Image 1 (cartoon, rainbow, N blue to C red):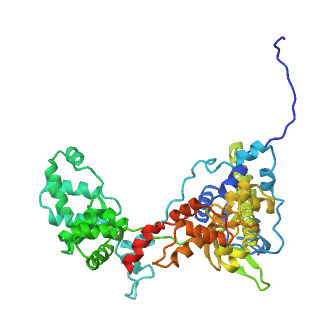
Image 2: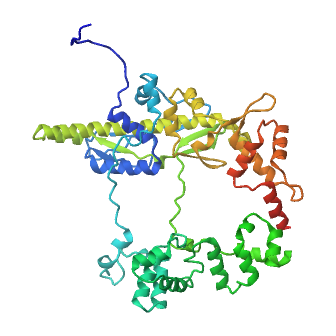
Image 3: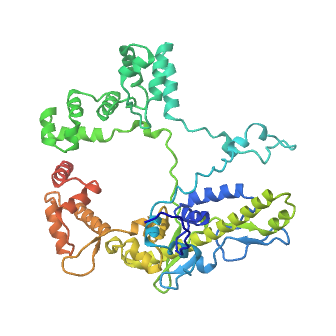
Length: 521
């Protein structure tokens, strides 16, 4: 057979991952905080984008700036922002869904992979200066009437939070006089972790600093006397020992208890009574003293502020007995595309490079607007179906949580599973029963004993916890007993599954629970 070169024409279908489609996919899986940061960065970068006026999605046309401005706003209609769990679904004939559901199955499976790294990391928005800093110094001026000016801010004089490192360094400079000892102490202070523990090898530290190991140990002994008591400990036992020494309660019996703290974790009280040479009453008092100690003495310093979870969706009961699903407008950034400004500056472009830049900016702005609108619609659509599927949970509680998977939601709303997976990532729903991540409503199924509906794994875990919390201290439930009770309730579950769920909830075995509850008695 001769080898030759020839031309052929073939026709085929394929899914093209355009930058706009990748942007839409990236926006879908972002949390509300990441989305706001991304939009702020786009506002800084794109001259045709403007921040929308008002708060959230209102359904009303946005107020235009100057007369003659033709701005396109990213805002869903009132039907998009709010829907009923039993009402009509939002329109699904959108551009992104059509793109996601076309092409071969191989491409669809490829879409299931995480595309969060498609875009390179965008440069973050420069942090705004602290108002407290701006109000200090030159900003503090007296007005002509002799009073403070409007720029005066009392918050500028609030003391900064004291960190663990700063507190220990202040004590170190008072306790250590020699410069070499201060150098060793400073190195050890900077080697502490956030909880106040010292996980370094003293021999390596001495070699690194060029001093004797004995001198490092002497400095460490001084540092271990600092406040809060327990810092610079190298393990939990030493941390508890330092705190007991500080309270003058480290007697021989307590020393024996600390040396055998692993028996305390196992609730082996008979062995501890024999080792410590104390009776049951004294052992209970000693254990109470240990429980009053702080296993993480450095945790009280420099703690980071806990940011509250901001829900993306609100679920409220409707008057007709159904549920109203509404998007949280505070988590939906609104941007405007200034068409008038584009029409004005495109006429003054001096070369093709400037025209191409403006055209690309307009296209990027329009696609961002479209992606944000589509993201809001998709979140509302998926959330509405979740509420419809989990109506029993919202009405009666976790015992009625149904087993649910991504495919069920995807088939119900005619979307791809990968789309549902991205929508439910890092999104939260506020319900009358609390705030839950959308992923919480998806759990595996445990079959029933005699037909009937399957049980949610989360509901079964809750039932196991209820049984253990209500058990009689004199009659502790074993895993086999729990299996029997659950099977009588119609749950077909194996003993190893009960043990796995119990360990995941950090609940001890029947032997450990018996020892602990007997000690409380």
